[in-house]
Image 1 (tube, rainbow, N blue to C red):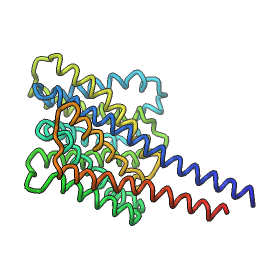
Image 2 (spheres, rainbow, N blue to C red):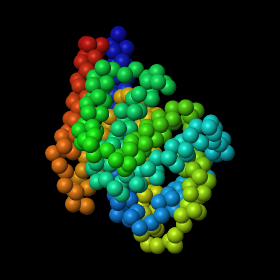
Image 3 (cartoon, rainbow, N blue to C red):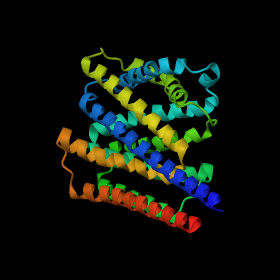
Image 4 (cartoon, rainbow, N blue to C red):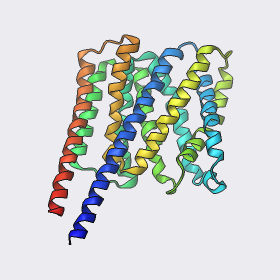
Length: 305
């Protein structure tokens, strides 16, 4: 009996550790995602958007190629090609929408809308994977949506805001679609195929809007490529490690990074509505983390003692 209790306690502690690890991975990933937005606001104003996105895709593929080539032939195979094509399509839709939104909205406002993605992830996880959604997680997601509405204010909704919502949906679908891939699919292989398959579409749009390559474009492509690889890798690692409904709210941590970097680097002033909206999003996350930790401790105490 003592041995059984010891194993049970170890299993529960391991599960808690796995969720915390997934949370941490998403937080780190969203820091890199915010740096992608920073690079865009700094350097994308005077470049062709589709040319930048096409060159960024090439840069990502070239960065990944040495690591991808070290995989065995079986590990390099695309597996479910339709899923990789779908992820590539989400990239082609979400990326240009995100660039336009960032150029016309403040960093904080754009990210408030982008981070509707975790709420959409919860809905998609329920519809397509039947993942259970606990009441307190529904409450947190609802408050997060309220925060988006408060920060944005309906009267301020324009084309840039709508494009940001399209980006949020594309992010949610992109991240969650990894669950359709076979178990054991290598992270490098997943990122490689999603980016490689996006190249033909990006190439077509870039050719129609090509401009001479300048220093701003080079810095933009290299900086965002590195940050994007880090973000995608963290997301894939996290969503494979734990249920989307358990960890997706950790993506809201990017709002803090966006608000701080927007204020520090671009002198963006956060009005009371934006701060209130961010509070509606961030505070429930902190409560959820504490609540689930306390429930896990109580459950462990009941089973072990």
